Amino acid sequence: MTKHTNSLGQPVGYPVENWQACDWPPHTAMTGRYCTLEATQLAHAPELFEAFVTQGHDRYWTYLPYGPFENLEQFQAWLSDTTQAKDPQFYTVFDAHSKTAVGLASYLRITPNIGSIEVGHIHFSTLMQKTPIATETMFLMMQRAFEQLGYRRYEWKCDSLNAPSRKAALRLGFQHEGVFRQHTMYKGRSRDTAWFSILDSEWPALKEAFEAWLAPSNFDANGQQKQSLGALQTRS
Image (tube, rainbow, N blue to C red; front, side):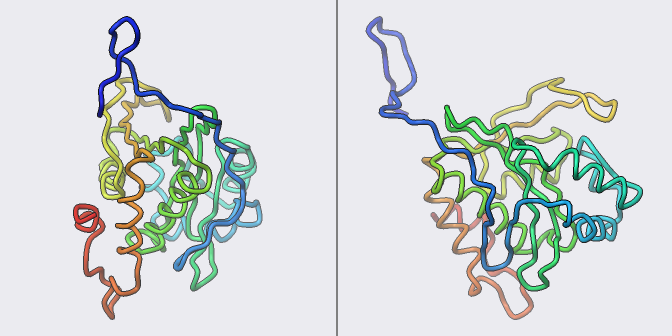
């Protein structure tokens, strides 16, 4: 990065000229080839609960500050209390083929005045894990943040002990920035938080890799990828 100095000869960040605050994300659908994201509604609860329960119910809630839920009523109460706010802004992921709800994700810590936004509260059922749906969900949310809304920084944070989440962030092109020690507490436990980000300058190359990976031609007759997303990022 080019070094900049002020009139006193001190190093400073590069100038951001003619900056205008970003718009708040519209809570509208995002549609891709494999999935559609819709604003989370209470009516989605039964399908989501069924999808989450069939995956083993407990282990996938370990690193979230809520759950597991013992019954649909508990889950509905949480959905009503948590997912109807302005921030975080929750989306339900629908499988484009089956038309059923298979997961949740959200924008949060939305800061339009400096162009920073985070993706989180990610809870993908086994119906979408390790499928193009999971990758396309993340692509659609990034695309809206960077292209439609002009955000400069896209964040991912997780418990530093959550190895699958850290691995997913790196696969999706996030850069690891470090660990905030004793950053917070949840479920009676201390949490060190791993921070990741993607910058707007990195998006064009990442977008090219995502589009190449998501193309039908990248999958064989058994639905197996021909090239990994990581390999395509290296090529971009």
